[in-house]
Length: 133
Image (tube, rainbow, N blue to C red; front, side, top):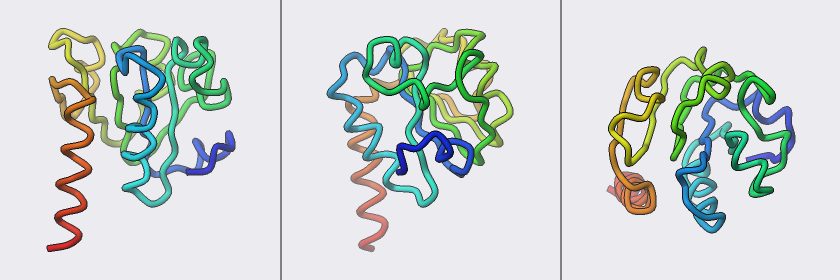
């Protein structure tokens, strides 16, 4: 995915990281997930950008970019109203969060209550297996 700010506007799939990814090393999983899709980009919530895990031009939300991809995957994003403002017009929203009461789930088409550090590698394995079969 192109790290350029325009990449968010052009992306058909955005995989977005929130505070719930836990540690900066888990961004690798976010990039791997985005890599499964053509025309994808990686984004983040404000806390992720404030921690300098991602540059601010990749921030989605009221103080960042407003995006409308075909698929928005929110990983470890709780769903603060500022973030929702930036992605609520996405066509299809999938959220992965360990908290079943996360606000993001109210805006999501698919809710995955799972730890992303176990879910994403499993998702990638299934995807790669389906390509081989």
